[in-house]
Image (cartoon, rainbow, N blue to C red):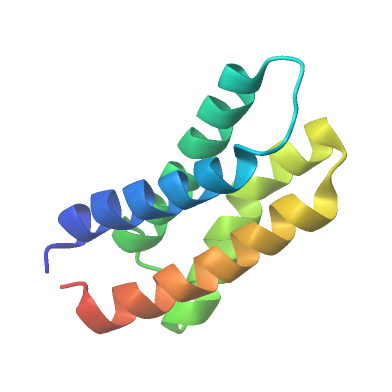
Length: 102
């Protein structure tokens, strides 16, 4: 599959999954928090698929995911959930990109 198309699909899937996981939580401005999380995760899925690093797929995905997730983790001071979910999603998307991205 084309890497850009794969990136859009992975970004949408990861963004929607993360947004869905945040629905039961409470935030001062829930719409902004969920939109920000969706965009953050969409960027992770897209970038992993279009960036070509000299690393195995899983490692490339992990690196991109942690780099993109780190600013949100610092701002919210919620390192574990943000970096953990980013790492898991990054590894999965990295493997998918290595297997299906051309």
